[in-house]
Amino acid sequence: MEGPYIRIEDSGAVIPLSRDVTTVGRGSCVDVHLDDPSVSRLHAEIIRRGPYAYVTDLGLSRNGTRVNGRLVARRVLQDGDVLTFGSARCRVGGIEAEDLAAEVELSRSAAPELTRRELDVVTSLCRPALSDEAFVAPGTAREIAVDLVVTEAAVKQHLLRLYQKFRIPEGPNRRVRLANEVVALGLVRPLPLTERPAEGAAERAAERPAERASDRASERASGQAAEQSLERASDRASERASDRAADRQERSGSAAAASTESAPPGAAGSDTAEIGLGLRSRSALPA
Image 1 (tube, rainbow, N blue to C red):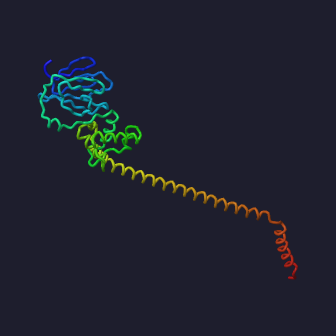
Image 2: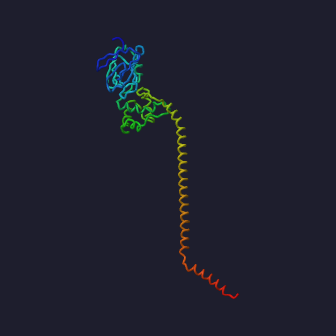
Image 3: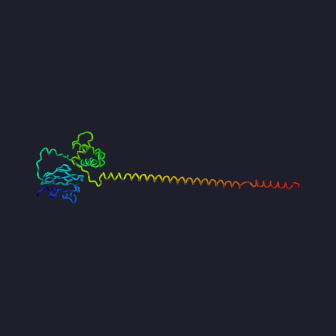
């Protein structure tokens, strides 16, 4: 076959790399279909630029892309390179060989080989720094542990090994220097976002005044309801006090009437007798 091509080792299928962009993945609409559960639906792309071809990992898979056993984000391909997408192996061929000067070859940055868990750690480490917000520090060991559901001690052990692999010397801001090195090598990429952080921040800023106004309205309504409740309680207390006072007055009037009715009959008769005697005594006087 003339020109660059890729061969799938499991099936032996050969797909020419004739397009400018050849997609690789498990999806049904990709150019190189890999029926492997460790491969993402859209896992990587192989891009042609004149006589050159390079593979780029789209950052959408936890298992990554490897070239000759090394985990890469983007790598220029040479004839005979073995590409591993997840656990599916392929081999590229038909790429013209080109002699490179020794100093040019040595100047290329070689990313260290990472285990799957180490890749998870560096991805979680760099996730805050890959946002659009300014002055964002990389994730702490505790945050990475919560993100990966592991212990903080395990994360620290992985970070120590990563410092050695990336040759990050001891000193301040060691995590920041590790994150900068990982991002510079292209080992991690920001995931596609349905909403950009800046837009989300603008929407949240627009929502805050409305939320504060709603809170104030709720507080005023609660205060008015409390005042009305107190007024009703005071009115009920006044009514009960008035009813008790009226009952006491009524009971005192009834007691007075009952005491008058129960007075001894002799007292009234003596007054009448005295009046009669006075009348008789006046009638007995001579004319």
